[in-house]
Amino acid sequence: MKVVTIIILLFFCKAAYFRKTRNGSLRNKANNGRANSLRKASSTIKRYAPGIPCDVYTYLHEKYIDCQERKLTFVSRDWPEDLRHMLLARNRIRKLKNNMFSKYKTLKSLDLQQNDISKIESEAFFGLNKLTTLLLQHNQIKILSEEVFIYTPLLRYLRLYDNPWHCTCEMETLITMLQVPTNRNLGNYAKCVYPTELKDQKLKQIKAEQLCSEDERLDPKNIVVAKPGAVKPEFDSSLCHIYVFPIQTLDCKQKELKKVPGNIPPDIVKLDLSNNKIKQLQAKEFEDVNELKTLNLSSNGIVYIDPAAFSGLINLEELDLSNNTLQNFEYGVLEDLYFLKILWLTENPWRCDYNIHYLFYWLKHHYNVRYSGLECKMPEEYKGWYVEKYVQSYYEECPKDKLPIYPETFEQDKEDEEWERHKEQSVQTVKKHGVIVTVIG
Image (tube, rainbow, N blue to C red; front, top):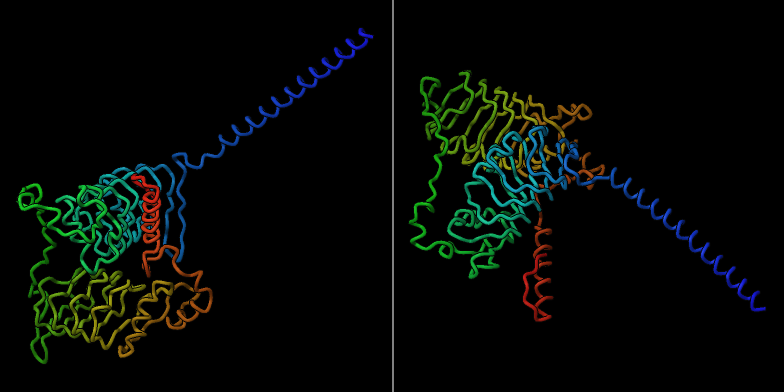
């Protein structure tokens, strides 16, 4: 009986050993299979590997490039020159060098948040005279001067928060710029990290005397030498004719002029620059001609008008822009023309898209201004339409879908407010537990 029992026990032990060996081999095969499949997947999916091409696309007739999360350390010179929006967030750019963006002259927004930027050279933004939005938050910038932004005259939205700002004498020009009332959307929520007595104070609220002592102000290295502005050429009376009767008139038509003459006599009431070759109107071209009431710029082939081109023309009553190459007006072009009565717009290739809305609504709200020639010439589907009809159809379709995805105006800085609120809540939570630490949101 004992012999039989021993034999049965040996049989069960052998069977158990066999099952264990078999199951182990199966598990090894399964694990090896999973490992192989993971290795295979990782070899084909490299989402953040350097060299991934950026996405270039067009939305509402404006070209975008999306290069976010590409581990970039520089800006490629091979990107299209006609970009309007450049998205470079979450890369590894450490330094913005002079002329880094100079070829992108049509750029309107530049997103550089969440990089490792610690140095911005004085001419890094050279050529960006159409830039309106610049995002530099979540970087490592300590010192910056106003000089950096001299090449971005249209800048309206500047994000600087979550940078370790050293509020010293070198920052005085930037802080002064941020505190100008008209710059209400520049540098909101940015705070000092150093020195200790200024820590957590907002750049927009610091007084200049807190930054520099009298000795520091007199130190040569802290004296900022202003760059000389562009000097307009002296007015050449041989090019144009001046008439006194019946009104002060300067006749410059058909003189092969390529730009507006400098130093126009300030008492001129009527200025005729028609039939020349003036392709662009730069900022403040007529700022010294305050008495001007009639301005004729027809038949020049004008392509672009700076938003501040008519600055100072508060007495202008008649403006002739007919027979040029204008497709739309940028926001602000007409804002200084308080007493305008007549606006000639005929024979221009007006493009009926979202950018034409400013001109239409300005005319709608200034109903005393008589105008002519506001007719769509492109795209083909709207050719021959009056702009008023186009704008009405625009909102009859899908207005929410047609708004720009990268807005150039904000009712409130909601994103910035959320960031500020999040940081304050984090600090309060830490204080409740009686622990003093530095919280980074």
